[in-house]
Length: 275
Picture: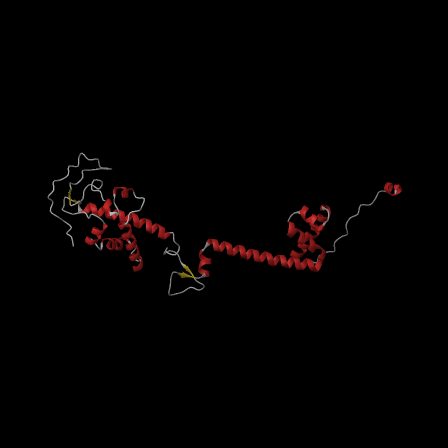
């Protein structure tokens, strides 16, 4: 296994004349040896991911165990570790670093942008890369209903052995939407039963008024209901008034009176003489 430090023999690179992006302070001196950056503490930055993994095989696994949820299953820790390893090993095809011939995250380390090449600055860069990727993975995972731990499994009956398993009664008692839907369904059932009782009452007292109920349920408008029955609107008003009368009797429990005959206007004496 290759050592993490080497003797610094090359002269230090003069950095003050180089432009450093977002530079807030002086950059620590470093040297280049065998195409590798060597920090002022003697730390040798790995050339690529392969060398990084050979020297630090448990780096990613240890990072995941420190930053993941302590209650996370072992299988999830293994999956996250593998995903982060793949992220470090392979740059996206559209990455701007590929134009410079770089293929993995380790190769993108730039001591000028990170103010040095010592071990602390390199580890800080790797931790930032891992944290950014892990944050993206965690956000995507929380959007998945099957992976979010706050979700509860829905069963026909609750299981005491699994506290995250709930039944229909729990859902209805803890969901405002389900409560409103249940109340609406219950009201609709009561209204349907009430209407059926009223129709039975009308069938016993005045069967002819059933046609008026059918017309109103079909059209829900006076003009259209009159056309549906084939009568004038004036005649429909009379039949509807009879239906209102039956409704009052149904609510009070009284017997329905007989319906009066249609009023016929008497002809005047002058009209009779002319006739």
